[in-house]
Image 1: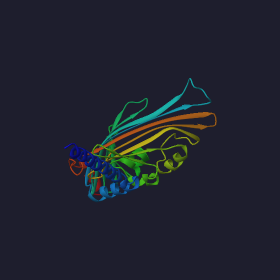
Image 2: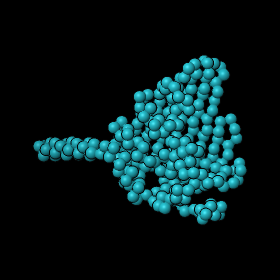
Image 3: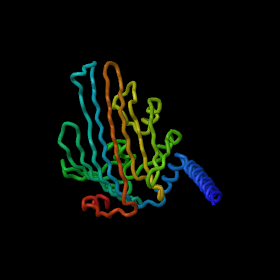
Image 4: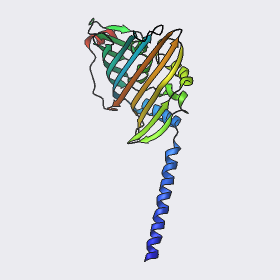
Length: 266
């Protein structure tokens, strides 16, 4: 009996080791580049609607001529809720805009195909913006993750991402240094200070999360703290972005305002 028990114990251990070995190999089958490609393809082919919530907060502190006692501060915060239908394109984004030092105000943006319409509670008038103006209004990073993440913009860093399994999915983690910042700013020019100079990266971290079944992106976070020096001035830029995505292919439909309908008919 003792020999039988020992044999069973050894067999169980061998099976456990084999399972662990198989699991380890399975986790290494997919690279970060594979995940980026497969997720992009999944969202382009099967994602029809989505809701997102994005909070973007940026602050820049300027110190002129080394005057640390009188820094100049500027910045803005966007709190954005989006409902998007992707084929055909119909997107509604409600945004609370809070510039530093002034009262907040609300903005409504609708996109229908390649046409963009905007109003706010400051003038209560609908205007049509040129296509691509979303990046001018909210910045290149925000436009790159709203209403979904454009993963093609991160392909250049596929070898730098770290792929990790998480509950119900995967996470891609990326930390960039000063040498990579220049490359990153070619894609997202509004990262860091608005001033050109010598950059020092204290922090530039990105995390993208994916659902393991659909491979849709479920979250995107970025946190950066970058110092820029030019002549005798210094600029400290801090930017944070947190985006969550939900209601995949189950977003609640919405009607276009009459004013927008009238504009699209012209």
